[in-house]
Image (cartoon, rainbow, N blue to C red; front, side):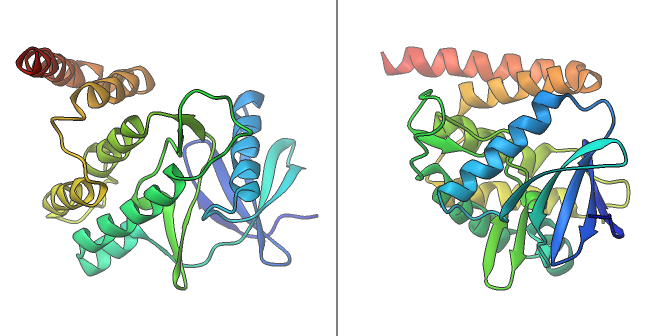
Length: 234
């Protein structure tokens, strides 16, 4: 099967059109085989449990690189909808609805590390509106675990993920409003997520060393607040 036009690109892969309303997510040279396998495993698990995800059709090799074939998703991401319509609060509620559905799934094929099914990388640019249905993309980090950690990760990505250079003015205010709405929709609070937010920021510092210096005082403050919070409850 030959590749069609390139229709997207991300940090680890490019996306090419295929015949029959399918696409190939073609990973860049140097992406570890384990990362490709993790995405394939997560996508197949999402399929098996009827989650809101594009259907996965297995592996494909092209241009000397590994790829995975999916149904093509046509529509706006929640990020695009936020930027074009400015309705950050609705986008946050929709993201929360999508996440609750994933967290509630019972995926017994995954290692028993916790009761909730965590997407691990859910954010407005990974959630696409196809007609009336909202689908989550990029399932490489799917795992069972503590729902609070997944909520903290989404909150960080919603409010703090690096913005494109062409991001419009006022987006920071939109993101903060979306974060508050998301927390309310998830029935969560920043106080209850302190330790989990610290863990997310620490992981981010490892992923992006150039951000580590800026993140360090925030991690320390969260951990200090968590210590005080725990003492108050005793």
